[in-house]
Image (cartoon, rainbow, N blue to C red; front, side, top):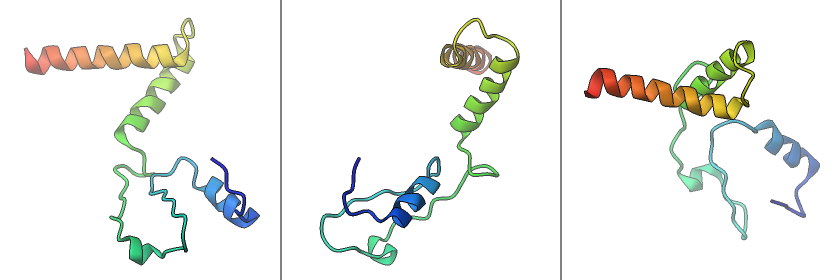
Length: 94
């Protein structure tokens, strides 16, 4: 993504928003206000605005750091989430 006319202050603000949940819109005409957009408010699900998936990924990453470095973190994450899902299916759906 590039923007030839983006001011350095606006560019800095854009990067400060990295990792946050929100709306990102493009409009090739004049700038519109937030009121005109009429977007729903975004509310975080946990303290610190982490989604459940992000929270789970961070927890499993910390466990991976301390234990199983034989595989990369993504492989570890997928394997452990699969184990958790299988456990829940067996316990509650069998």
